[in-house]
Image (cartoon, rainbow over all chains, first blue to last red; front, top):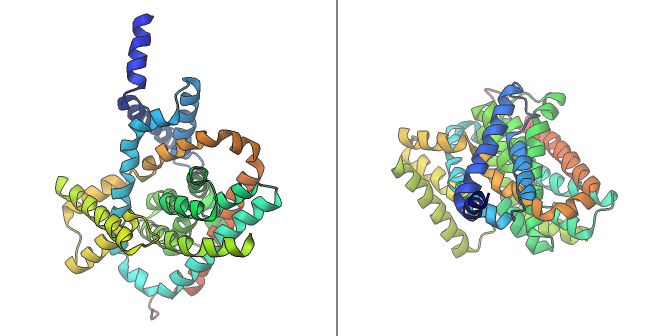
Length: 238
Length: 116
């Protein structure tokens, strides 16, 4: 037993464990997703998150220790975001054609995302700090965290809300779009990327390359729109 | 492949530098995406190796959000206390935002053959 304990103490402080369990939890999520007939209801990110949070709580491991290993996965978000230029380049002609639609949908969508989240949470009695942390939740996490800090929210809470927003969009987005009968891939992708940033984009890429390109575009543009519009909106509302 | 990973990182780095230099409210990777996009426009096509490298990253895009998502555990007490306004806001706002954005996109996008 003593030896096992020593091995655990060693592994718990090495980045190998955090990295490996992250990949294992995600593999489990992907496996369940395949088993469920690739239903968006079984979201691999959500499965992995639940498994990992449970594991960390049970083993009494803090997030900072876990992140020492997981940061290697987290780091790849940067180059992956840059790589979204490629699907975007492929859809440049479709994009040029819908430039007016993109501009109007961007401003309307960005304001709707922030105002509706703050409005609903306010009606249901959320605290001011929660409201301010919610406002930028549809933007990609580095922008959302910066905006949260600027308006007086909690950046780390915003980071969590951003990921949850992404998961919600990935899980129910296709159903909402089917319900309102929008079948065009550019419109579907743009809506997913605007409302649910990178996780919505990942889901859109699973559906169709055109949807993925418009989702990546919407993610980038809504980051910019959120950075400009949310501070203004907050000044008006609070 | 290493060459193209380097290219992606160089674009990201250039994006970080540019954002700080110009004081733009955008993260480095998003500006890096713009820089690579401009590069592809100038080049006129996507090099095959870059396409493969990008595909490898983008096929697993959702995995990359897991470490940040686990960070929700830092706020478990607050999330449990305000679970109702939070879940209603996240779900309600996402439904409304997706619907508004998609409908506007459809109304304003010219049909095939129309002038843009």
